[in-house]
Each structure stands twice: as C-alpha cells, then as structure tokens.
Length: 510
Ligand code: MSP
Image 1 (cartoon, rainbow, N blue to C red):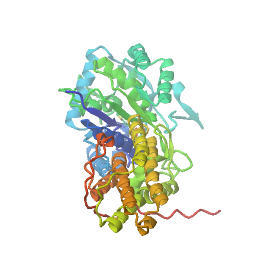
Image 2 (cartoon, helix red, strand yellow; image 1 turned 180 degrees about the vertical axis):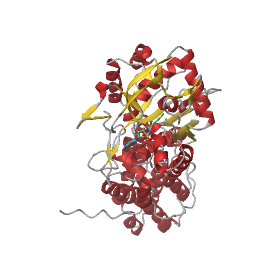
Image 3 (tube, protein in one colour; image 1 turned 120 degrees about the vertical axis):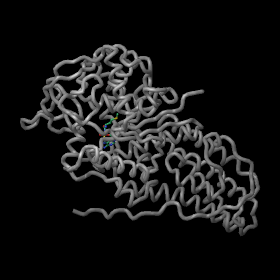
Image 4 (spheres, rainbow, N blue to C red; image 1 turned 45 degrees about the vertical axis):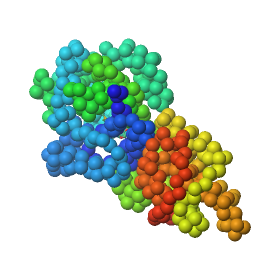
C-alpha cells in the first residue's frame, strides 16, 4: 500500500497568543492538505504547540502559573482558534504529551548511540525569545547591548556557560550538501534554498543540544541533570505524530514541512542532519512561507502596537474572506502586508460581486425562468471549453504550491460566468421567446459553478459546501473536473447570500 501524504506545520510557542502570521501558516498548510484530499489521497495534517524551553517557562512564571497549567490553557486557546479558522488538522501535537516525551528521548539516544552526541562545555550567547545559541560574531551591537541577529527578533541575548551535550552537526556538512545537490525542491521556493546553501558555505558547527540550567524540558535519557535542547525536542514532533518509535512508515517520510523563513535553518539544515544521524529517511520538502507584516510592510510587534489579532478580524469578517484574502493577496513565499482595506476590497469585488453574485443570479434565473429546476439541455461547448482550460490551470497551480495562481485561474471562470450572462441578456431573450437559448445559458452556468465548487473547496470550504447544497452537486473531488456529469433535471434550493459587502474604512485625513 502506498504511503499517505503527510503535511506538517511548525508547532507554535505558547508563550503568547497567536497572531495573524501563525494563522497564515496554518491556512497555507490547510489548503495543501485539502488539495491532496481532493486528489483522493490519505492525508495526515498536523499542527501543535511547542511547550518546553526557557521562553515558555518564563511566560508561565510571569503569568503566575505553573508551566504545565499555563501550556494546558494556551494549547486549548490555540486549538480553538484553529477550529474557528477551518484548519482541518488531523492531529494537534503537544510536546508535553507522554508519547512525544518517549519519542524525543528515544531519538536523542539514537543520536548518542550513533556517536553524534558528546559532552562538552558551552560558553556563548543564547536568545531566549528565539531559543537559539549564537556566537559573538553573529550578534548585533546597539547602544552597548548585545542583541539577537534575527531581524524578526532583535531581543537582548544572555551569556551562558554550562556543561552541555553537543550534537555533531559538522559531521553532516557533506551529506547535506549532497542532498541539496541531488534533490531539486528539497527547500521551496528556490531563493530560500539558496540561503541555506549560503549558510552551509560558512561551515556547520556542532551545536549545544542540552541545557543543564533548565528544568522545563525533556530529560536527557542517560543524564537526568540535563534537559534536551528545545529544538532537539520540538523537531521530533514530526516523527511522534507518525507513531515513532513504533511503526511510523504509514506517513513518514514527511511530504511537506510548512514553516516561516525565520526557522528555515532548523528545518532545512539541522533536522535533516539529525535524521541522517538516526538513519531515518529525510522529508521530501520544506516549504518556506513569507511573513505577515503590517500594512506598511513593517514587522508586527507588541511595542509598535501593530499586531493583528486574528480573533478580532475573524469576528469582523468571518473566516472565509480572510482565508481568501491571505492566499490571494501575495504569492506563497513572499511577505504579505496585511491591510484591512485590501481585504475589504477583495471581499467586495471578488467574493461578493464576483462569485456571490454569479451564484445568486444563476439561482434567481433558474427560479424565475425554469421553476427552480435545472433544465435538461446540452450546455454551450465553447464556453465550457474556455472554462475547462482555466480549471486545468487552476488545478495545476494548486499542485505546484501556487495557491494565488490557482485562485486567479478559478476567478477567470467566475468572470466568464458573469460576462456570459451580461452578454447574452437572458431577460431580453425571454421576452423574445428564445427560452431554449436561456436554458442553454443556465445549464452552462450551472456547469461552471460545479467546476468552481471543486476549485474553491481548498480555500473556501464552507462556500463550496453551500454551492453544492444549493445546486445538488455531489461531494467535490478533483477527478470530477475532467468529466461533466450527465444532465439530470433537478430542483435547486436557493440559500442565503454567500458574501456580505463591507464598508471601506474612512480615509485618514491629516
Ligand atoms: N516553536 C517554534 C517552531 C518549532 S517547529 C518544530 C516556533 N514557534 S513560533 O510560534 O515562534 O512560530 C511558529 C510559526 O509561525 C513559524 O513557522 C514562524 O515562522 C511562523 N510565524 C511567526 N510569525 C510570523 C509572521 N509574522 N508571519 C508569518 N509567519 C510567522 O518558531
């Protein structure tokens, strides 16, 4: 039996509430998971929370909770947000789960047994916010303070001097280079792959892989004074969800790890080296998305007060316009400048006036001219031919991670549908007694909507369900794109309006 399709998201730190950037990542992965389900594949799609480490321990302490109470509460909030956002995850993994603790320890032991873990003294810098070790030369100096060099962090680093177990990352320089040479899209998009190749050129250095001063973590299996470095614990979640250390080949190797570019290095250089040491096959692809910034393109941060709270946006617009906007606005891989104005514009023109209006017009005309029954007549082959080309383009775009392109092509069908109605002026034709021509038009429109119900399903699942229910289409699969079902006269059921138009925010005056 062939292996199932496994797509994972980064597991989020529960030290603060999730923001739009987190939701963006989960939505991208959700769409890809749905695409593969529509292709008839068995899919495992995972999200979760990365609950150990100094950062989470501090956040719990500051909030006046024990770390366990704190992460229990945060994990519940994360799940709630994902559930409200139509993230169709199959498994929410928490790194404090017993199954994961066992997996992380067995994995650590296997690196040790392979001779790739050794004790030494770590002396250097640590960024708690990033949970990353840095050398002196990496740091940014500002007004005498030493800061984390990650442009998305920039927080002050701590001096650390303690005994530590190291992982021999340097051992894997050559095998990693070979992997990069032989597997074209192991890191996607290409410019993110180049960044990793550049990083490797400076040489990989062994990395501190345990903390002696930190209690809130998973114990090193053979030394209870140490906890496993939080990344050495967190990355193993991808194996835990597949059943490691027991039977895990039903879904492993992972097909896609979806991550932001700030943690690309951990996924595209450290994780594969760890897997090589453990003699476990490598993931097929790390898919690196861009960042959601504020509308000026500036990094969101609490201090600037420009962080977008997904819960507020959800309440205001509902989830589907947000999903559509996030994926339609920028190509995957590029950063996105989050703008409510652009969201409203897309909602009003592409969703409400475009798709929503098309559905409404077709249903209204079926009711008015055909007693609410789809007529039994041959559709217009020429229009369907055009639509079919766009449908195939849209499908191909989905498969190559071009979700924006998939939507652009699907919306060509929306425009074709609206334009065909405007051009043929069915209301005049009815007056002129050309009922047959109107029926051909309507049957053609119904077929366009059937194709659209399939193509929009990954991004707008609720809308797709609603269209299917109103027109009596069967549950979408991609295989139905290339076959038009035989005409079956059936009654339609007009539902409520699909998208509500929104007021644009008032323009600020100086
Ligand atoms: N816990 C680690 C990941 C461990 S995976 C084995 C972590 N957590 S995080 O909460 O900081 O980030 C989770 C994901 O959200 C990462 O992929 C990160 O890149 C992404 N994002 C965080 N801020 C983001 C934006 N502003 N925009 C888009 N994605 C962003 O890193």
